[in-house]
Picture (tube, rainbow, N blue to C red):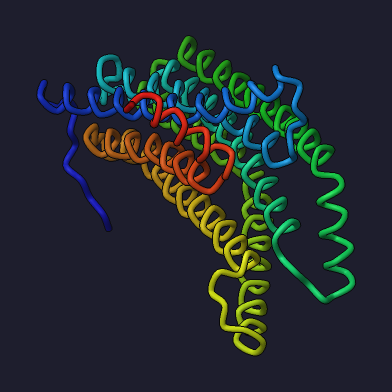
Length: 316
């Protein structure tokens, strides 16, 4: 069984290093996602029609900006406010619950993006898959709106569940003198809310895996066809497959790392009282959306072209 030495405080140097790295992650993440948002908003101002992909990227960039803000609040709270003797303070729980809600919206949007890539790039011969791909391609805006509405409904339930349980915990604190029992009850209520808010991730994660698997199957079929008919490595369809697959696989990896760090951070703070471990988890959670934003920019021709123009103007 894994055991860690309780760590109720960390040195001043560790705090400064952690908050400096967190500030750097905030700046880079905000800059990358704000760039995605501003480029697409500029098209809206110029009355240029946004493609389905650009619309999803716009919504995803806005969500990730809020996500970075919440993670930086968590970093400030962990560094200066949180006491390991009382790791489940009300302010910490509020930040984490709103992070879960924002992360759910981000996952919904990433799933819509994966379905869009799969419908635009993948090639199938099965009649059912062809009809499904055509439906997704035509109804992506309705799917995006439905995803946002469903995320809002889930968010309301998550927040309501959290605050209703918090009210029960506060009532028990007022009318009971057993501090250890109250601590266990608070821990149980928060863990239940954390689990409840993340249950909705299961179908989204499965949808993401299915779309990625279909894209891989389509890529294998296309490569086999290329070996049979041609040896041209500059095939546009092959490039499109590789770019879409790189975006989906990176998004999947970043989400798994972020989700795993979030899950590990809870027992690290509440059970093992490891402040350094909690800091590492928060840094991983903040690095993942930043890395994914960089991949999205490099995979999108319009964003890549605009970034090149800006860099050329700055450096000239």
